Image (cartoon, rainbow, N blue to C red):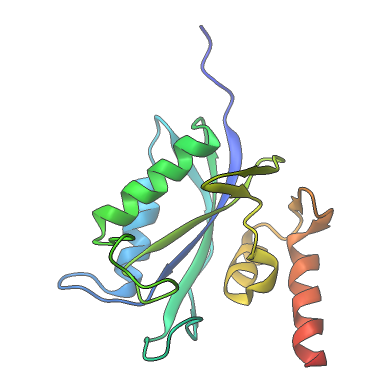
Length: 169
């Protein structure tokens, strides 16, 4: 049987907690290395990290955020499971943390090829990506022309729309 054809996926990466032996950048770099797995996923592009202010509860330190484009043979749920596994390997415990609180590593599945999925535990495109500069800016640096399915706009279009809304406030 022939190998499955890899499909493109986009993920967001973030970290605002340093741990013994790992800086915020170290957590992001470790995630990229873990994702570059020739049997399941291949990182084809990764943005430079940007430092951003946290969104969520007060008292958090700044984040490093980035984005990566993958080619993967994993299903959307399989890729999500892999992202959660990588988060756990970096010390993240989603069950014990505060929503939108500080974390060692946050990996969000933003886009998976041209699919639109709305199921319990999995929504693609990511439902809040169009409202988050810390997601759109690094993603636009590596995939500006990716048309977001169900929206019909490119990543760069979404970033420009967000910028216009921010100016209007």
